[in-house]
Length: 406
Image (cartoon, rainbow, N blue to C red; front, side, top):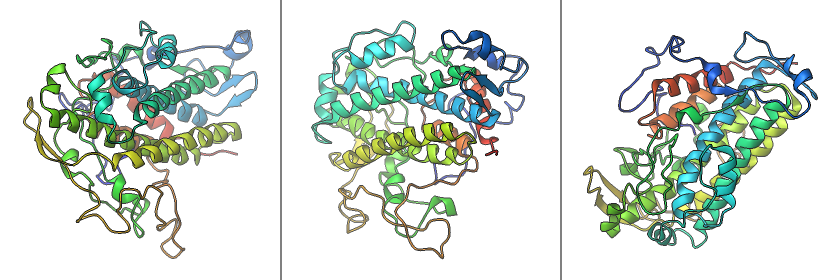
């Protein structure tokens, strides 16, 4: 979720832009942050848990049946809960079109999102077909990735509740339109998958033997045209299927976007784990973070199979995209072959120490805000409200302010 190659962008909308400065008051006159949190208590624990919430604090020390969480641990978990809800929202859109169409994911989502249909949509046959060149099991992987993110969201929120802390609820912000193509539920969304600028520098970063973003190193884009302009990763309407090459470009974009999203989680969890105080909270971050790494490696492997396409034009916006042969110059060779999906050893902690195969980056300073800025730069939140940005900014700032105690 973090863009390691560009300076920190203003956390803002891409169309009508509220800058950090404009929102420095956090729009307190317009947004009561607590109105977007739901205080949920575990069954039978209301009396003992409720007494532990500081009435005048957004991020209270929570006293629960199993002890207490420090303010910083609550802040970190609340930010991660929001991040998982955002991930669940985007993955549900991919699942509706391209995932295995049983009712498992839809049933789980219906229990979390008011009004979400409990039945699978049936998918989009052309979207599923164009996923096959990336891997014949893509639909299963999309299904399972979506289910994983939903369970992460549920667990973190319920763990917060078990400690008497406020859960995170973004339902008020489900205002963005759905795809109008076959297979998409017509339901309010948190994220926009039709105007993406996908950072593909993770491809070169994980193949570098000498650079690490923790040292300020930057990396070139694997798909340069995908990192500029606005590209759909799902069809906007069925008309996007009129050009076969363009529809394949949509699916290719999704393939690289899958990995972009999950490489962010691969770094975010270990980054924030370095700031937690409670050993049990550390266990949660390490355990969920490991699954994010598994997701990333899966999608890293599949993205390299995207069919080559040259100067494919979006018939609506006129934006062009090219998916080159990544086994050929300027890439290619031992370090850039497309089946090279395990991190190459690189500099870690000190340039004087031996190279080591690692997740990168893991520098903890500004981790939450960096993740949020990266998702914003990706185009995921185009069309969202100022209140949405203000709410997430508050969560990120409090998570980044957390310090390990004791």
